[in-house]
Length: 337
Length: 267
Image (tube, rainbow over the protein chains, first blue to last red):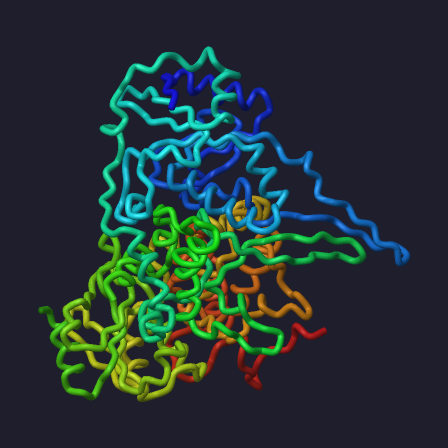
């Protein structure tokens, strides 16, 4: 993989030029009390003081509300305005942690499973992902247990690793990344050969996700196990909504008089309404069954059907959880029980 | 073993109790709810200043509700919620024992709603200084600034409903947001739909919010939504002299009728 040097000044120039050329640049920004991915209009808005952002990078390709089309009914005549693909901007997503970047792989496997979701794929196609290796981690991080690493290039188009002098090693991962480097070739100079590994955060691998995959199917019918595992869970959707690989959505029509639009919005298997039938029957009537679905989907159904794991070890769900349902612990419980 | 752990161990060993709902040490030293069924696990229990979470929400949970031999370790938020849940007939007298704490750390056993109510009367019921300061900051804003403040906050809400799920008083089996014929509240998490949700939530908690702030603590985006329910709680006190979580008799202003109520708003 080709490596280049991107000095801190060149990085500033790169982002400033991208904004100047009307790219939508999305970066981690400190807003009020939180750090999250937001569209920026100046380099100075960017922060690097985060383990991971609150919400995942998936919002760029799978926003929490996506208007699919507009409609209008007038004198019994219905007109429909289809999704405007020209409205999707060319974007550069920066500061994406390797776990998040790899999340797009899992997400894409869902959105391209049997039919291609054109809105999602177009958004992603028009996005160049500039990753940022992790130089710190916390107790929630477990990427190394989930086949990732703090310096993994998978999923990024370019991966930056910050050096002690504030400059960056730039690894050019994909053709899209190479194109961006070529477009701004004067900003990328010869690599100095710094040792990337020594710059990365240390994340202990406390378990192997392969062991979870091997064991989880045998736990499916162990109702007592899942009830106990989910005792603490209060059944909100926080984990799913911040997860980089959770892809479930609801379709809603919002109308006002004769006008309206159809919206795709996030949904979560943790919510009791998710599987409620019109008849009133709910096949997943308790939280144990819903928690089982969440873990089975990530560690059984996705590996079986899509050949990918539905968890990247970012630990976001555990950080967001109001009752500290730590997914890494639950993975270890599956292995141990 | 500390007092609490010893007490828990005794209770479970006695055979009179089969489940203790309390706190244990979670990730990064954070406290989290725990469910202890075996005496040998009693040493997991903790109770310190990190145990700030209101865990009354578990008392009426399907998996726990019918367990007649349960104990809950309660901080002052949980205690007040139990009183309010009792007033609303969501928990039943004698269904569980409460372990509360005196200021010196001694364990207080509370077995009946009357005992709980009496103990709660000794607790402080106002907002903390920091909370009161936040309320004042917002009250002092101009109408336009206040609107802008909440518009900014609501723009961030992802509608995960962690606020609802963590609130002991949000126990409706079917929430208004889940009714879709008609669809009262927008499902998508746009600013307007989020405003509808949070205003509705605050109004449904009018006179019922015990000001534990659990909704705000639960929010993954850290929206200060507890201020909305605090506002209606303060108004309830000011206009109706009703403070939620103080009486086991239903007396919340918006849910009861009194012959002496003013009706001059009907024109």
